[in-house]
Image 1 (cartoon, chains in turn cyan, orange):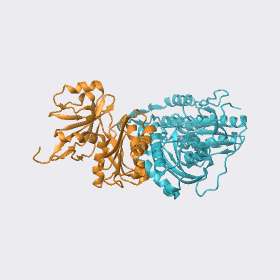
Image 2 (cartoon, chains in turn red, green):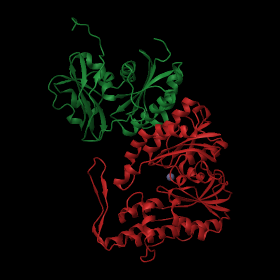
Image 3 (tube, chains in turn cyan, purple):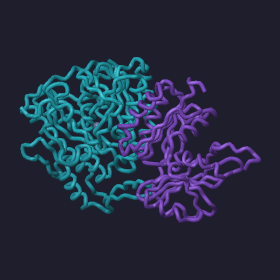
Image 4 (cartoon, helix red, strand yellow):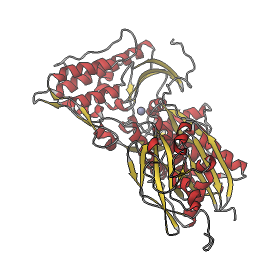
Length: 365
Length: 242
Ligand SMILES: [Zn+2]
């Protein structure tokens, strides 16, 4: 079964062709980082504007690189949510139109489920990735989400915990802004942390008792308190390019310990993520731990999880960690097996949680 | 006119009123409905309905027209996404039509200057002016965003106001001396007007680039420069009868 996947939930315009939920035939991603950099974060209005001009060439390229025509496609899959409403609607309306004209089934995919299923994918020319085994614990970490999920079979998710405030990737973005390290924050902090030493400063870890929930906003505030001692000029927004104010990084004196602070910040985020994930794997008898989402590309997180986890840890190739459409086409294959389909009245679901449609049992065993 | 290759589908989703038409030199079918904010959920099912009601298939469509605004940003993006995907999947030309051009078009026969406008939210309107140049009607090169109360300010000669205002503001316009107000049904954007304007361009061999075509985003208080345009003559008036 060959599925064309379309993903426009945030600031990547993506289309991909995937066979049988496992084999990536093409995976085209147009990043908008260049567009949002000067604002210090994604500007939703600009993101959806860019999707409008990028979506058709991206789809065309995905089909061309996969060497398939519309007649060889068995279904069209699209991210219905969660994400930015104005971005999601571009992909959803385009996908519905293609399914309508080409007379193909339309499969709606939860973006978070897509991230999970990135772990099933094999890239072209790579050794075949083994199918993950159940039950497993999956940590979905990105700029938009931090969710710890127990997965007992295809489509069978139990939400163990989630962030109560900022997502992990969002915390990295905010910290990078405070440190003047640029956007996106995750890679910038990881790079700065390589030159630094964690522990020279002490930032708090929010354990929240026995809960599997996360909280990162206190960490950001603690970082801000330390940085204020070094600040010459606070960060600000300037309105040079109407109507979106640009972000100007704070100015610091010469002795500001950026690298050490970045290292400690990263360690504080990673400690909590890895510790809770490893504990969940033990408690629920998981056969493996999966990482998913943009922050899954963070080397310190992978390292710490390898140290703590009682079972093997798996994560997708970096190009499949970031938002992409191959993961959407991949997840759609398993949804199609269970008869999930949408009609032309499909709407975007900006706040879609992972477990609404797919939850089979609610009780934690 | 023959059925094959002549059929144009026009789509307008820039406001709460969604409009669509099938046109092949004359109007085959029109649909106008209040979508509220449910554009994504309702537009494609309605396109399917319009085609079925008129015994046409989507494969009969030979060109796609879409309004480029001004209007609701997300509303415009729904129409633009659908129109681009139709143009791509069917491999047919795509034509963008400025909503204001379509609003002005039926009124050129009056021989008066025209100010076409759409309500832009937050008490603002976006308008463009149309003047006669010889036999042609030409749009000014900028779209202006002003407060609703300022819409009719600075009008010197009797000018046709084409567009619909929320109830209380209609009263504000009625007393003005320099204004010609057509009946409400002629001031509301009709699907066939968009189709007809696009059809003229299509028959003239014009098309817009599928990837690059973008809605026109006019922000509050701003002005947007757009290329001036010449409208096709809406009424044929033979010389000597004027
Ligand atoms: Zn994501």
